[in-house]
Length: 287
Image (cartoon, rainbow, N blue to C red; front, side, top):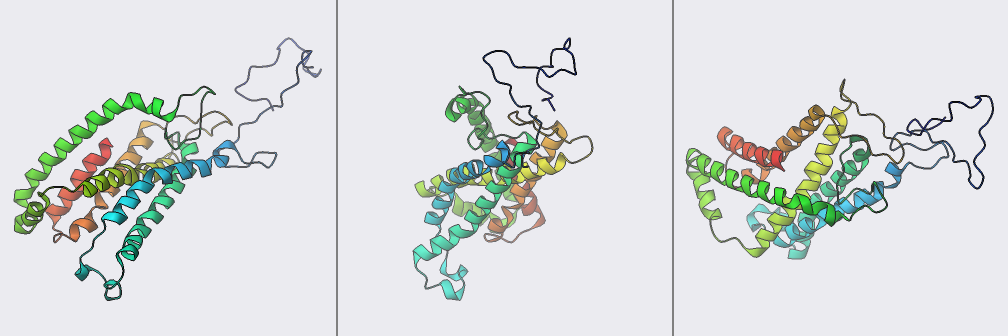
């Protein structure tokens, strides 16, 4: 069967006579659209499946510095540790602290790498798809977006700071004491952890993994299914409904994921839950 995207054969030719290639050329075999992630008729994997390890490795590599910084900065109070770990070495505690986030990172990177070909969501860094042989490097493609990203990040930081200050007087003395302890000078290690873990690791988990999976599921809703990508042709961008379902769900889970850390600092009240989930939801929507 000829490729549906190829030019039609000579319409004036006899359909019963096979078309011979021009002198000096060879006849190209016909291609059939193959859904991403399935085997081709010859038994070989499609480009989407073949490039899965590369996408997964790049996503993990992008989030790995945050895991390292989290382990280096992990200094738990002795009272918070189980009795069997109170005499453990700092190195062992750091490795244990990094294990769970590392597994989550690897799982989210795998999910995002698996569903990316079928959703139209492509990461400039993680994606192996190149539309042209002379396609620019990832940095060249990222550079035009940096001013907008910086402006959005700065705007969200100001908005979250003002929102946090508005909530603080309403949350009681216990939370006010938590905020007072947090107003001290920020260490360089703590700042680096926030940048690399919050800015890269969590983004791989929530946007690449969770949002990609939700968009992939939303495309299965009536009227939202994306066409199966043709070999060598990128899938279309998902529709606005499927995209916004993924954005909102990932942002809400991003906000809810901060509740366990807040619960270690203060008793969770309904207003504190609204503050934690709401502010992080706003950040997640912009990110």
